[in-house]
Image (cartoon, rainbow, N blue to C red):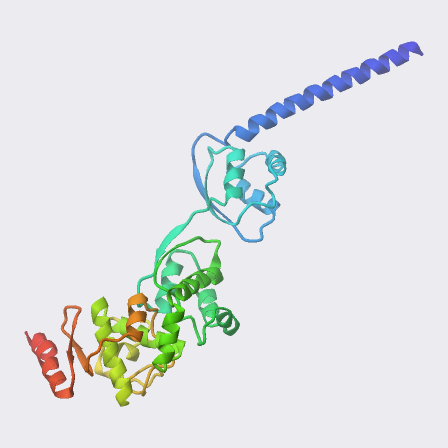
Length: 341
């Protein structure tokens, strides 16, 4: 009996020692894993962690991209670092020479790939969409659908049919995890930062709603790219509105043309579309582009001049005239004679 007990005790001791040694070896292996790269080739991979991805989905993405090995160890490390619920969605550039602890740190910090995106002044919703699609930041159908979603527009404070006019031109930093909604919200929020209560009050003093003020600004921006000249262009349109004259702005006649080559023809001016100010009286029903601050300001504080007409001088500037006779002379000088030469 004593011999049996001795054998059992020896076995238990042996088992305990074996377990301890195994745990020590596993701990050493695990610690070595946490600081060792998957390989030393420094292969860079771009991985996208979609919003709402569970931790197992994240590890699956990383494993398939060759960023991590030994998923059980990676999961254990993540749990010890309290990381599973703190990993942020987005597009990441990860290198295979990174250690697991470095990878987890990057995912938790949300060190995602960001894209500087320049939205120029006075381009249309369609052009902005195409630019964002080319960068892989949005889906065209989703973006355009959301841009005209009534409930979404209300949440943005827009009284209109689309976000046209309210996507403020600026340089933004976007990432591929943001999606159409967040990108639109970012640009519209920037618009409301620029359009001050003073500007909204001024629009009211001029008898304009916010939508009408933005529409006028969009036409001004399309007509002239010169900051100083915008004030005079604005005055022309304000003067024509006061006299009940049609605005006769060329850009409004081609607003719906998807691939406009920059050459406006007489047939364009005769087109029966809602925005064509050669056909309609007053302002179009909505903006025709997304104006910058100079155009927005000019729409509210036009120059104090009596001009009613202007014509391009073919150098980016315009000649302004107070009456039709003077305008015809300017057209002859800057358009007809110059084209003949």
